[in-house]
Image 1 (cartoon, rainbow, N blue to C red):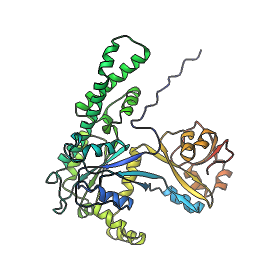
Image 2 (image 1 turned 180 degrees about the horizontal axis):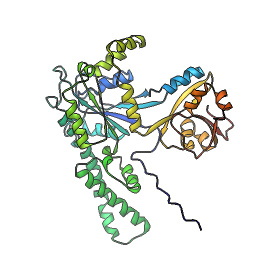
Image 3 (image 1 turned 180 degrees about the vertical axis):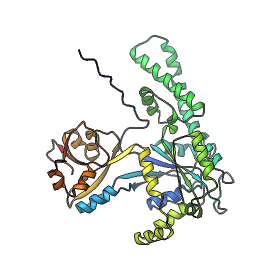
Image 4 (image 1 turned 135 degrees about the vertical axis):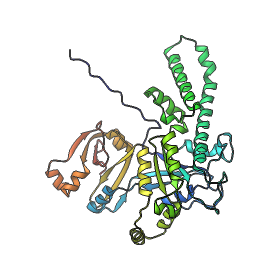
Length: 397
């Protein structure tokens, strides 16, 4: 008999499964969260100089910049064009003691629990007209406050689970049924995670088995979420690419959360840009030799959630970007379009974007033999242009 193949178990992801994921803007009061949110979404959320001006989280969908989408629109001349989106949530400022209910802490922490990733905003500008909740600008201290409050909330949730289940676990003893063993194993995993967080670590920085990740995901922990650090500079510092706080912030991230992304931006500068029309903005940016930080911020947040997108395109009808998780199967991707299509999916016609662009048209691409037929269990890849063929007799193109 031939030797058995070694099957490598695919690593599970921290966080809830699915394609409709959200990223939340988190930070202390008056660091520029609502100003950032207003500019990036062109929404009218109050940005007054008041610590709790954003009490209910505001959510908006932000188009993901993609030159491939722009090319498809120019090629297919659709009557409808819908880009892929990143959902961004504006969450009111946390203060020291939030995990114990200071400010409006418990409500705000529950808002963080409802998102899948974090834009952690840090203030790196001095402005006497915008009060700092802690008195003066100190990024080191501000970073510690937010991370400490998130860990404290996770500890409270984990300790509650342990307290609620400890007596039942003790009663099971060393024997018991298979179900008892499963419960004891899960309890031991939660204790292990609790000890990790109690030692001052974020859950996302631990090395966990798939079974442990499944248990962690069931707890909806705040420090399990991916973090991208956004540093809000004055317009002057952003344009001259120099700020006294940036080296301090980078050092803190490298020491505490190595590998996390840091993106400087200026809320004032971005607000100025969104109030210009397209032609005026392009001319102004060319004149001062600068660029908006928003495309990089959106794409980094999108990637932190392990998201990608594919396209459907029809001549004169619609070009649309559809968001899905990386390594998604065709059936998972089709479910974004319609559950019935996914449930009755037979096969998928796939065009690779680079090959389509090089060919210049669908007809030429097909003539070159580069229209690929994939089964429903095949993996969809970023940028694929697809046509789902289902048992419904019609499909999305």
